[in-house]
Image 1 (tube, helix red, strand yellow):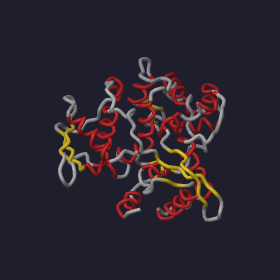
Image 2 (tube, rainbow, N blue to C red):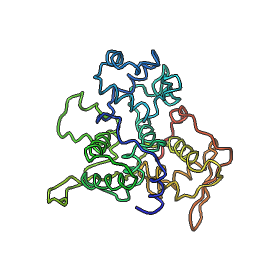
Image 3 (cartoon, rainbow, N blue to C red):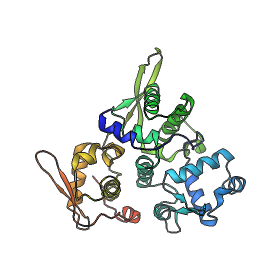
Image 4 (tube, rainbow, N blue to C red):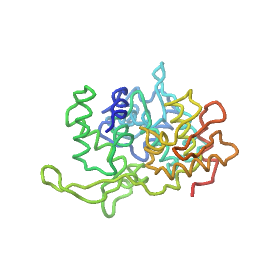
Length: 317
């Protein structure tokens, strides 16, 4: 890891727990949305939440964690959950994807998890936004977690770090071979992204064989031009809100950039920027150069409405 990445890590605050060792499950987010619509204080009384949501106490705590981490709702000063624009656009009465059937929604959830700040989820910030290699084994990732945790001055136990890593892995990879029941197959929505895939085996330092996992870098046409633009503007607003320009390399490889979070190649990002430049209603313009491309904005920086992602049907091809 380079010095800039270390600085980025050192300047962050992180969450290593709160998920109660449960990855978010398919049915949880729609249930939580409906429950909060009916009672914004539903998560303040765990027993009531258990009855309303039909899940156990630890799962209630886990779901409370995930609705925050995935950008569904935030606690306000009155200890009430306020639903986000994203939540209403997806799950509302006229929501675009109330049952999480659209890949664009899943990529948005992945974006929310991976780009969250203050505090960021350590596993996502490090594995998605910082991990410098195309592949990893569980033992390699856990060893890196322990080194980085110590470097940041934390005193997390190996058990805590191991559980945090496992939740990250279970979010994207089910590990279930062969036929599975409907309940198991619907456990984790982000598994459908196939972002992390097994790619072989190798021996670890103890001499035991381990599965090697790779980040999928193939073309991702389901990440549409509008979805890419939404995340680009979100990234820009977080890292350089006062700047009129961004270099291409920042979008490709900077920590928590669209290129890093979605595992897009430089060529893929460049093509997407050229498409945006040719769109009349986009404020983004791309200027290629022999050294590196430059992205400029023609208007004050403002977020793209979530609904626009679903209303624009043209897909990146």
